[in-house]
Image: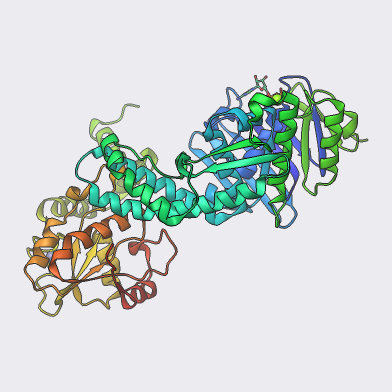
Length: 343
Length: 201
Ligand SMILES: Nc1ncnc2c1ncn2[C@@H]1O[C@H](COP(=O)(O)OP(=O)(O)O)[C@@H](O)[C@H]1O
Ligand SMILES: [Mg+2]
Ligand SMILES: [Zn+2]
């Protein structure tokens, strides 16, 4: 998919912008000019939430009461999408019809890559789980439905456990349903992680944080064996919300200890390239923030080569225009305005 | 302009009702002010009447002005078949379809630990008492296919296990999230016709 037009009103530092984009777009500007904000606006239209904050209203321009994003998209489908943020919440409108965020996800897949993504290698397991959830939800609508059901059930289970009364029987009912949903999630995650591993990286998947194979009976035994512990602790100690997976060097060592920052960046880049290749029907919009900084010129040309082979629409931000990106349409952000250079 | 005390208080009280915000309660009040006085009086009387005179039926739990309620005391209905529903809205929607000849049992809610509502918060003991007597042959669980509906369903199956009563659940072809009280006549009829015995869990 591709965003052809973007209209922004009162979104972070931008008062009002009307932009048209091409297949390849390079956004330059000094620090604080609003480059990341432009990526954020596109991301928020496609994913329904920001990548910078969980509080939607933070993106509303200071001193203003509402923010508006409007985009026109083309490709496998044609969409006109609107996202309005105000004191009464978030309203998403697709082709003139109000829709729930769950129904937006996957319509226009989007991937955001930035140096922050290095935390996929070194950060806590939650970072990796979140990444996986975002990827799978956009790849497969059923995953999103099942995952939401899972969240609801695990909340119900934790609430039941926190009552601390005799809930043995009810716990069994809830566990039974949880297990089926969990197993689906585990299978899907394993499937995708197998595809994400490759020549350079090895992924070790630990469902529920355990060193076990994804075997129905074995996992069920674990669930049953944990029941008493869960009752005495008062919260769930089993399930996909405790999943872990490590991204390791081929030989099984961690990147954190054995790689330079530049090397790690390239690894993350390759990881995202593999994630991108999983999308068969709709190609995601690729948003790349400041990736080129800290990459030496040989690594930059590797990335450039990867970019050349992509069918996705691409947005890259940088402090200055890199020669490797001379084919890109150039936008400059300055003083709350965006200027487009026709090359 | 300073509003009359009564007007102000009415606005506040009305706006606390479900589905009514400040704006809509104001609209209702100013509409009532233009209505015929007899009609407004009738509305007020009826509100008091439903609140004060209606009591839960001691058999099924439905609010009624007689005890047992009209359905429970109707000899034409099949008292061996009890349809368990969450609330009166579900009962009304099934009655509207007018194919069901049995009686009801109203739970007055569903089990939801997330909302702090455990089994003790719904009318289960009344159901057990009815089944215990031995006249009930079939219990139909007409609960929403949701997390809460399923927990409640499992729980009921468990507590009725000692009584050898046939327990069935509606065959909901409607997508997940479908509600009994929102279902149309055709969907409901089909859901009843296709009901299946609940397997043990
Ligand atoms: N809600 C907001 N209203 C107005 N300005 C904001 C808001 N949020 C952030 N900013 C401003 O936006 C700028 C940061 O934009 P950003 O997109 O991160 O810049 P860049 O990526 O070009 O470095 C900062 O100057 C910050 O003060
Ligand atoms: Mg930035
Ligand atoms: Zn009754």
